[in-house]
Image 1 (cartoon, rainbow, N blue to C red):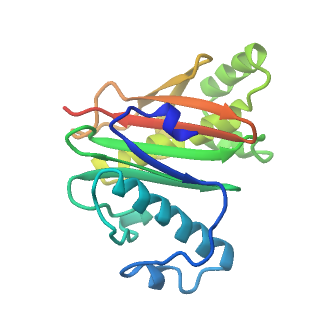
Image 2 (cartoon, helix red, strand yellow):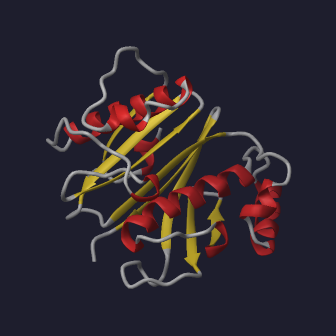
Length: 215
């Protein structure tokens, strides 16, 4: 699903279940030693996806530990992103000569819990989503906004190395499957014009991606 949203230089691997007996490498077992079973399965399968994606670039197999703020630590000269939700895990990677940064996110395609939209969307964004809902009532735009902001953050953090809140990115969607993110925080490493991305809905899932081209 996510591979359809990304350029050909990105290597993608996905899974729709958790295969048994997958290995963890390096310090990965320690990182989930106290996690509940569901979290261990997600962690293990998404790293299996990441190693498969890296193999598509001729890299690995290598451990992918959690770094600052939980961001995955990729091999040198590699950029990437991982995501997991109910019934879906995916990883996408590229060489840093092809992309400066990459963010992906997948979510269950259903409305956000009551009250969450006001925490993640500005008044302007909520009005925008209401208009989109009139045009495309088949899309849960609140969930799509949440997913897109997750992808924006995943592309932002490896460049800026600092937090970006939901309130720090103002998103505008096109019903044709794209979106733009105007950033209220500035950083020399991040494009001044903000980020652009793509989105899709496929049955029970919605997915968003952000790619940052080379300078």
